[in-house]
Length: 162
Image (cartoon, rainbow, N blue to C red):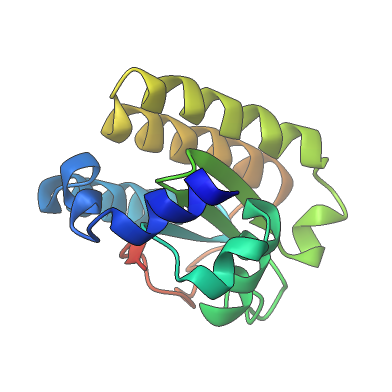
């Protein structure tokens, strides 16, 4: 716990731009925009760097749930929001799906996508891992919640950098 706290206290916030430069964030945004044409879901991608000391007592999964609420991912008309949450310093990735999706898609499916991202990130392939995860989430959402005409874009497609 002490080492984790020190890491979060002394790592600068700009570390995010090393893994996710502006060009990568734009490609993630475009991938989400394209993805949402094929299904009725809403995808948010959030990257968080150093945490405030008060947030260190929270597990990455619980922090992802907090971010899910803070970003309003729960606030879609059909409860079809999905958050891909990256805690960069802890190397933790979580996918949180709203209740409309969670009722039809097992958490183990989301966890498998997270583990794939973790493997890519461990190799320094942040963009590739993020884009591959969006493709996999898209496949699940297109299968379970296919597009029905013009999909309303209810959440921002731009990644949230926290």
